[in-house]
Length: 295
Image (cartoon, rainbow, N blue to C red; front, side, top):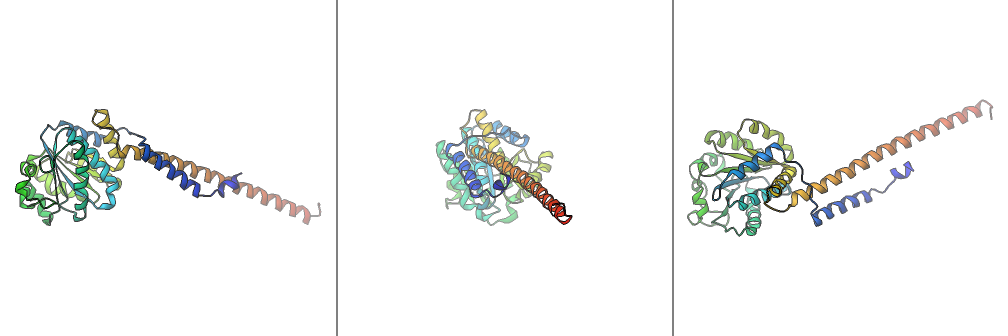
């Protein structure tokens, strides 16, 4: 039995994982974890903002992390647009993110009948480098003369309304790089505005010094943080479950499957090895009896 288990064709394991993931995505089976402190704090801060307030988000990442940051941004934007908060997006530090931000905002904005340039805009990249941190304290028009589509700044009402840090209720960096520390060091500590982050898993520990020092008001950590935020939205009557919650279900079930496979494989290896030892001892004893003339 145990030997047959060790010779089990691994393609069936991969097939099982594929079926679980596919069903979870198709049927959107939700699994909502309890929200962590940083996710709760971020949600509560957005909840405290009023209709007509503005937020900035910075897309400080590359397309490789879109599977993490897109669900984070979707949950966050659902919350903002549900409360009629205006949104301005930037990717001032990472040029590769220019193609990501506008489509994600537009996808959510359409559901709430929000108008580009009036309720939201994506400004895109600027070659200003680190000078962007201080320039955005004075006027974003110093480093942005058009949005990502080429629309002149003077023709974008929402950008003219929220021109500097003191005009906004929150800035959040969705980061796959070490840029949250730059925003804290060069912007938040100097100009004292509410800052938060949405980060990948390996970056989560790096955010806690900022959170503990009240330099950040909250954080979404990895796909788990997005699922937590979706859970808070549902709990407060904002939206149906999104992609992150169904992803957590698929991820959790796959983890259980892999754990079971690993445990069974180790037990099978132990049992096969033990049986092998018994067989070797039996053969050795048989040879000894033959050599001693006992048989």
